[in-house]
Length: 206
Image (cartoon, rainbow, N blue to C red; front, top):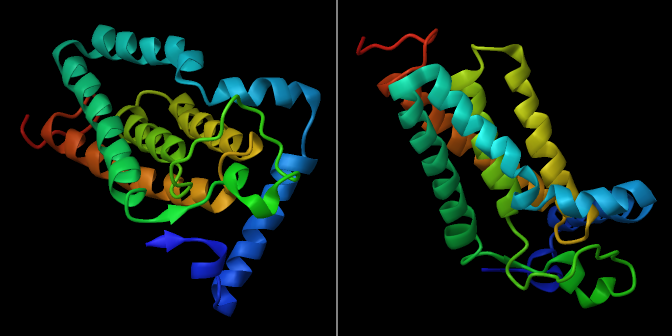
């Protein structure tokens, strides 16, 4: 299926959704900006920027939950792999949408703040899907240990927002990715709690 202006936005409803999408995109990418955010947002979307956080998660789980911490780390990694497979290899291979930075009709309008514009489908955002799946998994499995784990959703949101800010995704791309990722993380998180469960969560096998 090809998702383009001419192919899929002929109906009034889809055209309305597309106009709303463009309205939000123009504001996030072109109006609600600043030199500080222009410098920060490209880094927020890079995995290398968050390596200290990823390392902290692994160390925290292994130090505090010993053997179950190893299973937690495996669950986290599997969650990220599943979400990437669903978004990148399943959805993007069957639904193609031009990215805003690739759309000829938006030439001269889009501010591209990264060194290249990917040619893969814009729908859904794999960044949003991957990070919201991980955020949901973390929250469901570790949320009982501290209220601060709720902030992982802020972390996932900032990365998703950055995708629109730098010009490589539309808001609906990241919204759909976030919803899909949250559903995947909810499934893997519940399964982990059922099979293992970290201290403080009921484990039917214990």
